[in-house]
Length: 391
Image (cartoon, rainbow, N blue to C red; front, side):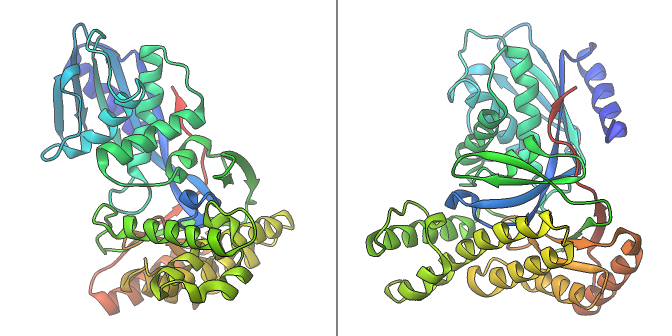
């Protein structure tokens, strides 16, 4: 089993707290976003992969209406009755993710006549690294509680339940990318997502390459308004293009780069800059799919570099630390591509690498980063892994 040591700790803690074995245990991985940045809520395309780090959620039904959740990583618990399940404004705010997921399994509010549950969660997705520890927790929660309560949602529906939890309990208006990547991950391959049709396709990457995540020490937070403002700009731009293009436009997915060039003059400068990023990303994902079909991973990597430049110059969701990592990567022949991963504004970079040169790559990037910022980033080799499952 992947991450056996953490599983063992979760089960041991459950036995210690509740003097029994859990009735349901689920595991869900974090994810890396490989290509297609901020395209999910624009109904576009994304390449992503589930990673070999994730979250376990072990649970049993309670005898009464009490809910109790213990977070191994925080060494902290939340408890309350079913009637008290609601957004936590301060204190144990980590509990918003499992509580929100639980609530939306029952259309936003569990019935107080139901039994509650007791649970232990634990994982190894680095917090604040842009690897979607939150979606990992939501999907593990959803699968375990679905078994306990006998609901029958499909994988895409469970992903949407996690997304609702993120919107309403955590306060982040995310797209469906993180939850879908965690659910639909495939061993040794990428997930190509179409967020208009919610179709998820497995794409082979090949054994000669892997990913390296380089976690900057820049603070990563998406709920401070920066994410929401980018999303609003995309929605404003879509409305504008719907009015000037002689075709149906509901999202930026419907706008081509050529049309942006021709009609951008009617938009405020900042809105135009924000809009071109997801438009270009959609085109890069489709081009990337063609390259991978030919086995051309080096040209695919070049698209990752282009993606980061678009983030840096147009969407402005990069930062000095992420830019330094990508610039250092460009000088290393065994790195084929690099870009920020996830929402941006800190967090991690995703590098497409020759895994046999992992030590060399890590050493060089740490050296250059330390020379600039005085500390070292965390580098870890990651292989695409299978998606969420009930154990």
